[in-house]
Length: 124
Image (cartoon, rainbow, N blue to C red):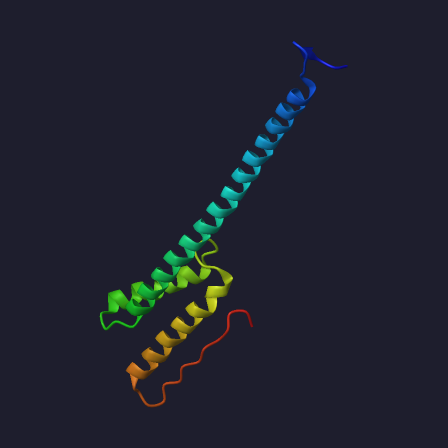
């Protein structure tokens, strides 16, 4: 069936309008999907950046001479390590290294003959 108005064939115009509407829908949908992916990646990046700032602060605090500050830093390192939301698995070796450094610093500060510091892996 051919639609005409004043001798003008309307079929290509109708088909073109439908194709344009479908194309606009899929373009908007794919743009929204890509925006969600980018937002999720940016959120993960911001979380990682913040957790590494907390790690840096905790590690610096854990070796301070003030006992309260050092204890708070050590507790923060423990909390970061056990947090599933804040720390990614790839960053856990950084916390391990910081905790080992704290233990080594405590052993060095003890300077008592015969003091043995033994570090056990919780997974073993």
